[in-house]
Amino acid sequence: MEPTAIVTLLTILLTLVTLAATRISPDVILMGALAVLVVSGILTPSEALVGFSNPGVMTIATLYVVAGGLKETGAIQWLAHRLLGQPERLQQAQLRVLLPAAGLSAFMNNTAVVAMFIPAIQEWAGRLNLPPSKLLLPLSYAAIIGGTCTLIGTSTNLVVDGLLQTEQGVNLAMFSLAWVGVPLVLVGGVFLYWFADRLLPNRQGALEQLETAREYAVEVVVDEKGPLVGRSIVDAGLRHLSHGYLADIERQERLLTAVPPDTELQSGDILIFIGAPECARELRRIRGLRPAGGDVHKLNIDHHHRCLVEAVIGPDFAGLGQTVRESRFRSRYQAVILSISRHGKRLPGKLGDIRLQVGDTLLLETAQDFVDQYRYRKDFLLVSGLNDSTPPDFRKAPLALGILAAMVISSATGLLSILEAALLAGGAMLMTRCVPASKARRSVDLSVLIVIAASFALGAAMNKTGAAEQIAQWLLLADGLTPWLALALVYLLTVIFTELITNNAAAVLMFPIAVAVAGQLGVDFMPFVVAIMFAASASFMTPLGYQTNLMVLGPGGYRFTDYLRLGAPLSLIVGVTAVMLIPLVWSF
Image (cartoon, rainbow, N blue to C red):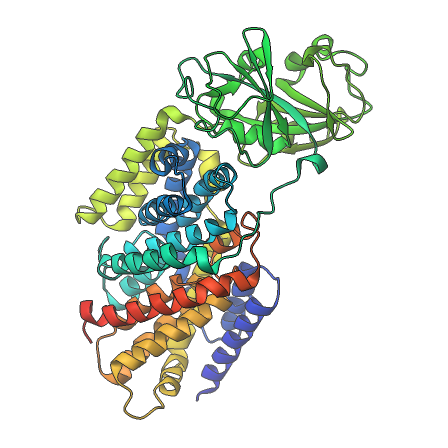
């Protein structure tokens, strides 16, 4: 081998070991590897930075904005309530999880899909007296497999498609992968339906314990024009919140305590919840509820520009010793106190009559710039915003879903490329204010984009130095290796890389190897490239291989062995099915 190829292989090996064995951020590791390749002279700066202009990477960045619009308008929750329904048994719940999760993940970011379903499944588990561990890991797996059905279903597909465009001049259509992806959904779904209950343990989730958290009393009103009027507490999704519980209902000046779950909600009911500060954030995302405090509606702040903030009163606070009403808090700070916690416990009684003391923790509804404005003022000892606490603008949910549908249709029919459709959809989300520009910027995950773009430098170095051809020769050492067996070998190596490092980095690293293997066998490279797309998404055996697996780890109370128990046979079934089907669609 040439010295440059040896340096490239050593750099890649060190990168893989560092990614798998340390807690250093992947974007830092990949950028470090890029720097080594540039400083050593293996790559020129333009060659090393080619990933940052790749159409696949830019498409992923744009789709983050589209996903942000779906999230900010509440379209995700709006879909969840209609698709999930109210199952009565475990197998019904499994079907209602597997089918919508796989279907939605084909057109939406699967991370957003899993985040949407987790609270609903926790509610099911509590109502049906089922352990959440029976449902949450199948949710993650269904979302992963569903994302393989379309080109936009997972970022890995877009990354590999970007490589195909820039290096081979090949474009994949929106549903090119469906010929293999849909059978994988069916095979994987049947396996999960029959074996998830048998292979997964009965284990409760690691939900936050309310007695050890800062405890607040949060009051909300049932909107007279909202969808909750006439529905029971259970059907409204208020029985099993993650961070609080319904304590009382105030109805026409009567206080109803210990209300049964089948109690029907009436217009104007004041619901009193006890729980952690995140309970208020959960309630903000339920359509048909609004804050009970009258002062909330007096805030001169647009509804969609509000957020929840915790603030601890300091010794220089101007209203010490005064009641909330006397302190004129709203006028002074352009913020409304929703609840007060003292020594970690909620304070009973009417909020306006509570006298403020040093150390009181206030739960506030205010403008999004409140934290920056008062973080270093002496009025408060500590000011902290609650993530994702801005109430969704449900009125624009149908509009956001319409924009998503237009993007998919225009791309699927060939009217626009994936990138063009995504750019127009992202622009439409901004122009229609489905997502504000500030939220759109925050919705773009720069660390993920840096990992993907920097990974392109490793692939370019392998091509330029001949390291990819050398690895291909090592893979083909066995005499008489058929293209089908070589395809299985490429698939297996990609799965191993995916379980050890990020799925996108694994796909970029394997791309030049797959093309080199096809070249040495004298066959078409497309089956090998498509195999990478499916294998890089087939991360079922560890919680770290895919972000959705990590998201359900805590809520499901899972252990590492749980992923192996269900994920290993699923990975084998999906792998065998993919390797058998891919050459039938893309012949060697």
